[in-house]
Image (cartoon, rainbow, N blue to C red; front, side, top):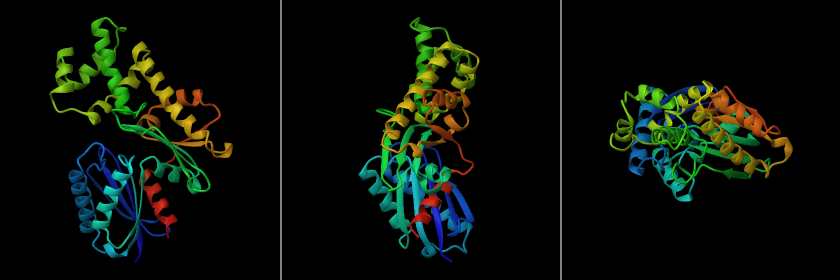
Length: 300
């Protein structure tokens, strides 16, 4: 039996889902991160190899040679070189299949809008915005990694929260409940523990991004610094959407929201809607792996 595979790859985990050509789910498997921006290529290859091996061990009735198309939506393919590396991995793992590889912002567009015409905005660990017109042309803003981009993503929110704590300590910024809330969450006693946590304990992008929910909680309580951080995040995300929307006709000004900072943080979503009242923001119960399967079906 011929079937499709959709893979939702990210900075912390990867989800593989198989389905029929009618998009009836046949099975799925979770594995390690697959973001080439965050991890060495050999680590990503090892994670993908284990993911496919575990999947076929769990579903032995599905044969690799019967997979018609693999659609892989993943963070970390902002350059042709990175896309070529991921293509090489898939070719080695699934030599009998066709492939389509895209940014992780594209699958939610297919999941949330029939035909995949419109705008997709993601704010998870990082951020990115993509648009697609009826001819299939793609337009992009943001998503350039946490050092030179990813404004409005979880890492940016978490980093700005840690900065607010240090500014309050120095007297350069207002006192903030973020100090007590983040110290309590991380089990820290003072700012010197925070310095140690940030620079000496192996914590990085994912761990800092994981603090963003605390910032929203503080903003809901009315904390001045936290509100300012969320205002900035909303403005940064709105700039991405506006930059993409200008390339699309008005009827395509529908934006699918994806990533925990938008799907689970109503404050950020509400601020974004207020900044761009002419854009219709929607969420979907389907996930990115479903969107990847829809992309795969387009090639059949």
